[in-house]
Length: 389
Ligand code: COA
Image (cartoon, rainbow, N blue to C red; front, side, top):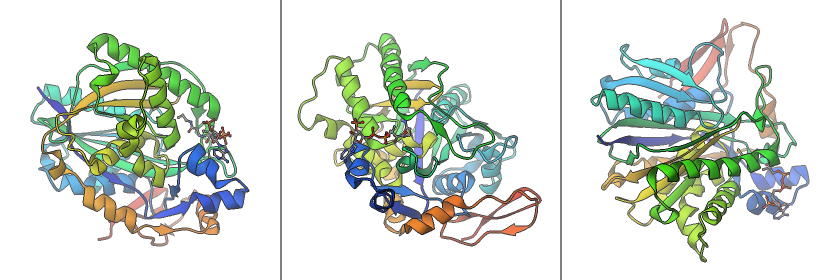
């Protein structure tokens, strides 16, 4: 049975800061950000946007394209959860008005959570071929102000329908996995910014890539040349370039001029102008590839590398389905990104420093531009979401 991604949709905040604004204020050469880490803009969530609103806003357009009654599983991968107990998936389930005969669960393993969700959803669909799963990756990447991680912040969500006979990407059964108990990036429960040993995390990311690839290769016998494109987890776009160069070298392949750009270039576009979205980021790369590829990718095999610090990594693959373009959200993605508003440094810092009310009082949040779900406020420690269209 063919199982994989039937529909895919991306959402990010309507606000961003240019990295040259950040560079100027921090006294850093902008080339470090634009070339050294390969980022141009960071998406910043306004106070009435969170991982739940981004997820629901990503999911709504694709939910409208199917019979939502068929969804009997919602899996939400995130590492910026809003509640220690209630799953973000349960909020989204309610906001989208899904069937009560549905499981709704949140998964966590840093940036890997959504990939775990994709594979669990596929196993579910294989046992119940008529069912559909809604899989979400949604995160706000947040580091300390002035830290090396600051220019790699961002936010975004990707929603996917996983089903049998998928219209976008059939995912192969075999995948290569690597897990190791390391402290390269973590966020204790009492902190709202991640802690990261940045340079170490890039080394673990690359080592895990080799190990996951080896495991994948042992099972499939496929080689580097069997893939038309590669999507890598994207903490920042330069990381994917380094990963691709590393994998090519590991496979004994010499990249010719233009190979890097041709094999991964289209996957990087959205991330470069939105920043890291942790669990969503690999799939933001896939959206970017599908939306921007000038070549018809129908029938082509794509390599996918997911990495979550801590760490769990997986190399898997899928084949893009003929006619996939008709099912993409390309025009909506372009409009959303074109209509974003730029923040000044002061506005960015003010939003960053806002503290979520924890006194149990009744707080109504200022209305910013979101679409169409927003976080209207919090009362008695309960978040209040509205559909404001
Ligand atoms: N022009 C062009 N490039 C420049 C530059 C300039 N003026 N100044 C620096 N650079 C380059 C550096 O040479 C380096 O390139 P290299 O990695 O190819 O050697 C790159 O920009 C980054 O500079 P560096 O000084 O190494 O960065 P940093 O110490 O400020 O931090 C990270 C970089 C990635 C460690 C940091 O952004 C981070 O902690 N990020 C979060 C963690 C993360 O994303 N981990 C990834 C795995 S999930």
